[in-house]
Image (tube, rainbow, N blue to C red):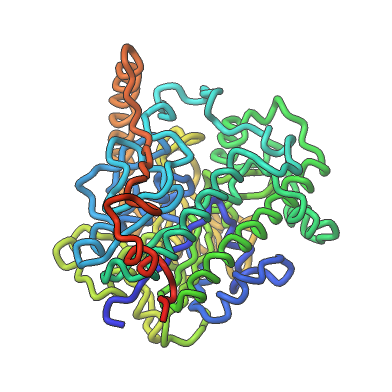
Length: 502
């Protein structure tokens, strides 16, 4: 196919270390395991930023947060930044989104021609951090450890209700696409909010992990004073002093998290079955926006560059391309140029500012030589943090903190910071030079502070008087569905059937 159909499954906060080469053997994920067997699996994929909105804006645009200016979960994603939805739509694709993308600002489409659901998170500036007040918790929206102490079983939650709708609307759309009313190729993004906390799952999936051997982290919590400075900031932002976390809390949280992976697996399996039943062929991509520490080192959620938070799964099933594993580090910002490459869309007009690289050459035996870059400038930070993943190395830098240098081949839990080891000063200096060539941290910090200050003023102003929310309001064209008096019954019934009647 010169312009293949494309089906993207995005999940939220899925730890990539659980997908070393597809789902870990012990995960109950038969549909994702079947998908992995026919996919190119990128075993070392990293988010552009370990937080929802910045990670997703980067995934869609191929740009780091310092370029998108989506620094945190309340920063506007500007309408003039092209996304893969823009590029593909311009090339003749029908582009559609079912589910979450956490767009902040009045543009709630960003190139999607159609959006089937509202979002699950707010589109305004209300979640803006404030570097002017380091250490101050914004209690009504910052994470706290209640997600851990409240873990357990429920048959319906805010998030389950949302993802049930995401899957339903996506399935209905796949049936619509099969009925031939639109001859264009399509790119459909199905974006779930699980397994993002709170750690609550339906009993039938919870029961799958009753005897799991993975309910405690490999690296248990250690004393607050022994953590690095940014980890301490995360503990403080998560209000850790007001919660007592027990081993039972940890077991229940991880069990619910694993259960929700199985819940997602079932939803994805249903949609893949619709694709198969309607004889539609598509490139299938599976990815997450960032990971979850899941209690490793005592840390939860994301917001840091440790593997649990920053590493994500990425699998692509490509018609005519053999399944394989690629171990070279890659990034979620590579998705946008990869989709354009697969669709035959040139990025020449924007190549001088697009940061991501197409992954297609890697599937054909090519090599990756550039470092993978990450940025973080949101809650729990008091100044931007940046990271480079290069070969076996990860190098983290922040003006407030000592450098960090880890060799992931020898130290997968990142317990041995080599930045002050005399034997590794050559590597440190090389990576520091690469980092300094890419980032002026003082300028980055000033840009973030300016953005935050502007948004605090705008948000407070817009909340005075009449308020018109930016949240996406999905509309149904009721008069164009089912049977209406301007429709020919015979034509309608035949056109809405797959396969068509004799």
